Length: 428
Image 1 (tube, rainbow, N blue to C red):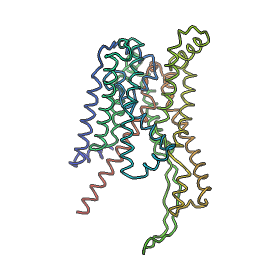
Image 2 (tube, one colour):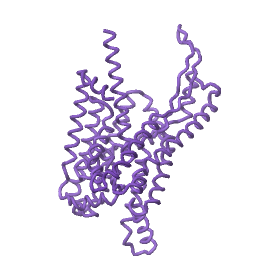
Image 3 (tube, rainbow, N blue to C red):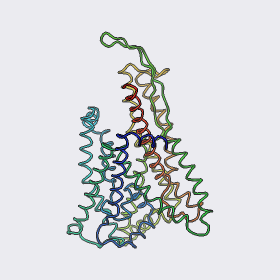
Image 4 (cartoon, rainbow, N blue to C red):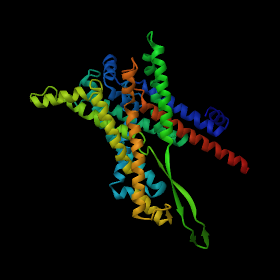
């Protein structure tokens, strides 16, 4: 990998892309340190220390949420709008047809996604502002006050700015810009996460098992993330115009983790919502409402009842893995596409039998991917139970999954561009 990067730096065009990407990431890290006004830093530190869910959301915001910066929302609203647009494609035929219109369709869907990001940013910004004010991080203000509106505009503008920077990386840099911004936030938080482990007289005793667990998790992430089931597809001989094309065998790759980290995002959002709503009813005059709210706020905050919270977290990740995979891969559409193009799976009849076969295979490999993602999600709680001094560690399997995925995809793009240069040099 290092040799590939060194070789890429010798190529002027690839070097420009790498330096451009690095420059955008430096701008992002600088924006992370631009705080919103009137922030109580001590209350902010306590809030994130005692709320692992917010720490996980901070991962997806690129680290700006924990700093209460103007980019505190990060790219979360854009990710949420992208997820909503993908889900809407499965239920709105017009969007499904638009997605099949090539470059024009993709550009229109991207435009709709950007437009949907703005209301998401306003709504999420208001929720974050209420949370910060309720915990004494910022002064409490009414919804229609100048202070609240300026705060919401700052959060929304920060999200739009990050979205623009991410698209600049995707267009003129190397790799996926949004993923790189999240990646930079995770890398920037590593010193703060590792610091408590290295402090104290027994730091070596805690560091060794931590390194072993990290190596095992990275190896597992690479193995599962790159794992796929290759289904052979045979195409019959066909005639087009005056030319006859011989039959050929290709492969339909089905990834073990088709959903990526999306199920973890869904699970975090679902777990955060009840605990946050319950906070508003803990002082209710109705007995059963007050008791229920106190139970939810106490046991679903990721701090007190770890077994209950971890079990719900694991089950939600498994459920949303199947849920999102059902939208990502449609066996009926794939079977219909193969039938129309003269392709078939050896030993399986075209049409309905092919659809049922693809459905069975997808369910089986998704089970492994779902269990893997669920285990990755609860890894910080497992580590904190066996390694002392890591109770507040949020640099868990989710962060490693994102970092490894970004590095692997970037290296693939880098190698592809190097291969293109070799072919161009050969042709000259």
